[in-house]
Image (tube, rainbow, N blue to C red; front, side):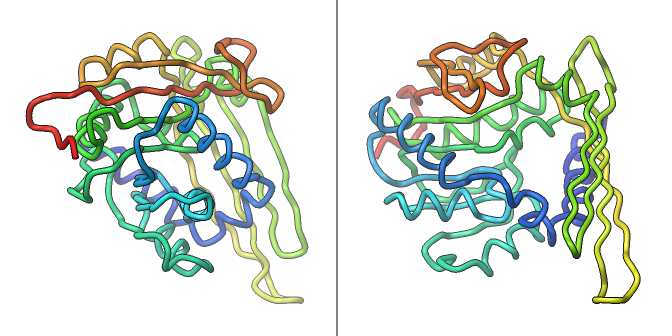
Length: 269
């Protein structure tokens, strides 16, 4: 695979859906997720309030974290998503940057880096996931925390068999899953978005596809360790509630909490 193949496909996926992303995900409770992230960071002793939100999408997580008292910079691959983030109320309180998680620019030194809502699942394989960690480590002070979530193997398998329809007066979203690689728990997601162009006018259609990948917690831990982190805990999510352990068959997602270790060449301020 060409090293930028994911970059092209992800940008295409959100180029078609980015303008409608907030409507498509309107039922997601970002206030709740931001508070969960804050509570975990504080439980593990986050050393300050400077926070980098990698894969921030249209900024809903970044804005909620800013309201909770963090000084936030939000990064996303999609220019369309970043443009939507900058149009939101309170956007002047957050720095929004278009950038690839696998090649983060120098944005300062942070006390915490978060990746909320499983954007890392778009990365096609462990080699691509591993490319994220050096930039995150460079962005963190020694002792800083990296908190992110990923789907479980069971959720990926269930998503492969799921079809959903979400309908409003001005929008219909059809989402279909398909198993692309059962052994690797890889799911192909197809989204058909139909939007009304006027009260009585015609409807337009956009179709986008993406492959969603599963990463085994043990391998994630090994990759983090190789790039200057110590994994402190892996949490699970079951029936909307955080658990102290992650079941890869039963649970919805798992959360990884890692601490940046002191190392030569890394900022410690």
